[in-house]
Amino acid sequence: QVQLVESGGGLVQAGGSLRVSCAASGLTFRRFSMGWFRQAPGKEREFVAAISWIGGSTYYPDSVAGRFAISRDNAKNTVYLQMNSLKPEDTAVYYCAARGPLQQLGTRTDDYEYWGQGTQVTVSS
Image (cartoon, rainbow, N blue to C red; front, side, top):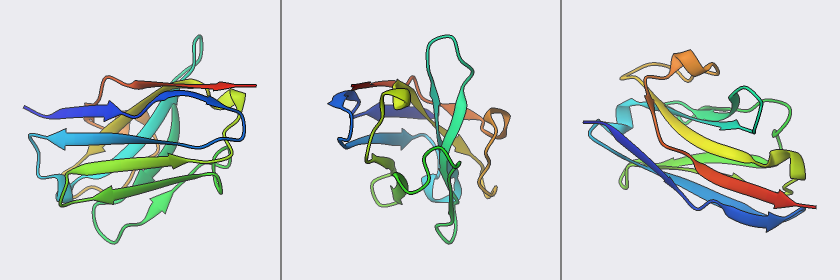
């Protein structure tokens, strides 16, 4: 059974940094592309970052490019999202997702088969 468990969310002031993590189990992690999405109250879930299963290619939307960085540690079956220069509009529940095996990174929610339960990130002004 595939499980994705996010951690590391919390409350941070605007301009601050936070790193969220996602530990995966029940899948051959190194063969899966991974993504991060977020969902604010009353809004649709939106793409935040993705990293491919091979080569480490990454992709970000303009809203977070230059501020957020996704990385993975295949030895620990974990994907990370480092968030810097946080803004109040970054407040949301952050979800990690897995796509694969052997699929390139995606940017749409329906590209991903497996999802975590989410972790709350709140940025105060």
